[in-house]
Length: 396
Ligand SMILES: C[S@@+](CC[C@H](N)C(=O)[O-])C[C@H]1O[C@@H](n2cnc3c(N)ncnc32)[C@H](O)[C@@H]1O
Image (cartoon, rainbow, N blue to C red; front, side):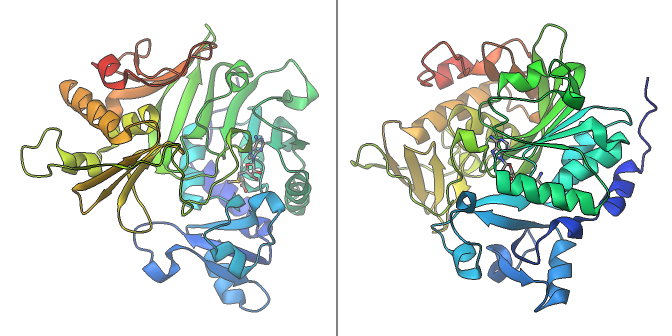
């Protein structure tokens, strides 16, 4: 049995594997958190040679540092990074989210760790420090250029985990070159909507998987793998990660979705006191409702650039302006579905995240309320049509 982790092991790791070793001299910093001044919220350029103070401040603040755009097809320049038509495809993630994820992961000395989405290499380095031996860490990165840079960055810190180039959704290496071996911990830093079952299969029973569930705006999910081959777990911090590339190239959040049909359907929402459903709580969902909306409908409502509230699955969209003017386009009436979810959530006593969780089995994956063996609704059954036509009813 390896010794338990030291309480300050993560703090040590952050010092011994310093973030600045993983940040290029020129990059795009996107501050996180509510206190960000509006002018800086969409990001700003950092150049270590031209303005070292600004660079160092960004690197050691809670900022996502974007290091690649559009899978490398668009050069990272200030203009391109700021353009609504481009999408980040690699970044050193927010330090606060990274530390939250690693606390959930609870890597112990001696653990074999898989880090999915190597990126700059920073989180792989942190995992290597926590595991106590870089040979115990395997990193998978889909982009060969990024994999090369991650290897170089890690080497500057004296770390040499195995960095494998490949799509982590389809093929996974084993730990220590052992193709049949199992990992104790799987750490994922790209957003996932459909969890590849291979990740569960490759984790030993009792082991944990921590991943950002449901990009672009989702929550950290910590799963524990069981002897019967299932994995169950709960949601944690709200997070925003770029999606696993094989589940769709990152989309610019400012880019409009098209809607398969072009006829907008308009109606007025009743937002007064006692309205059913309570429009206000749907526009600003509590965490429990947020998770149900995100997994059952597509995304939870979010404030779009124009100030209106948007709900979209990428094809259909529902927009609410001034809290009352609803427009729905595309094959699904997403707002109607969201209202059904809201009613069902209310019938269940408006559960919070302490009553809501997620289950993955070889056949399906689903959100549950109270009972991990009973899907709340809209299971992602691989063998069935996944169109969520009975969302509210099955939440019933
Ligand atoms: C947010 S960045 C990762 C941050 C990284 N952990 C770090 O510390 O810098 C997400 C990374 O996941 C990689 N990625 C996306 N889809 C992938 C896939 N299917 N398999 C492996 N890596 C993937 C991207 O290329 C990108 O480098």
